[in-house]
Image (tube, rainbow, N blue to C red; front, side, top):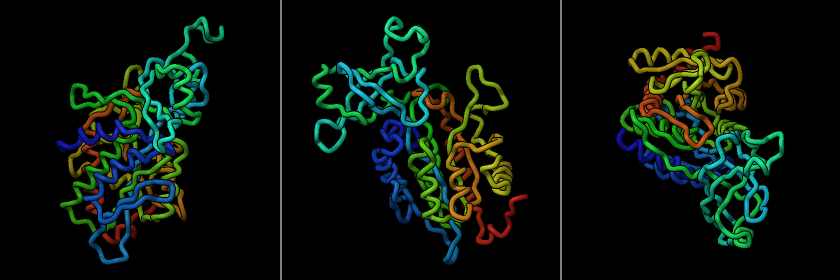
Length: 359
């Protein structure tokens, strides 16, 4: 997939914090529009693309969920031209000092946020409470510095303005990419590969490609999209913890060895079994991860929406989750996309009659 890398770089370079996903949604809509029969936005802003199946109507449908929102920061106060911050989603304050950021300033009155470059700084130890000292400071003590004088900052920035990471994606050795927001834009890229594969593959079922909003702050988009679409089955695609420095083998998976198929309370055992058997048949590398509880992904929301939807979770191994230097292997994204396309192409009209919970 030669177009994967530039598209992925475009995705991770776009802002789109939870609740404010429009910038990245526009990119996805533009890429998906020629790949689906119709596309629209849900009432919370999730993007819904329908690729129609070939079976007689009414057809069963499968919804593939990939959240497009990102974690980030928000301005809570302005003091002497410096910006106080809070988190939007699960931000690790330890990695923030020294990070490049973009303040999406709304005070200019233009109707659209104006991007201001900034850096996140930690005050020197002598200015912090004694109990913090030289240790990593909590987020409430960190500041964003735009370089502008206080009067100009007061004109341009408002409390509530968003702050996103500004580091550029970097290609590492071995077809690996590093950057912020690969959770979960890498899964959006995998779903796009799936849609491209299905252009030349007949499939009986309708396919709903969904880029959900607000996953990082409560799975809101997955709940509402599932309730609106009412799919027969759901596939959630997200990232999972990849093995990195100091991590053990029992709760991480290696990078570059294929997508992880999750077995746990958020996933239907028959769907899990079907994906495993298909991957084995295709000789497609994959990993198995076991979740003893709620996975924190869209799979939980799809499973319990309406009367309940049989769901399964496919995960892309990712190092350094929720930092500005997340790392994924491009071939894991490609394999996830291909596995989904093959699974969807193999869904027969009577597939639902063949699955039971205790399979």
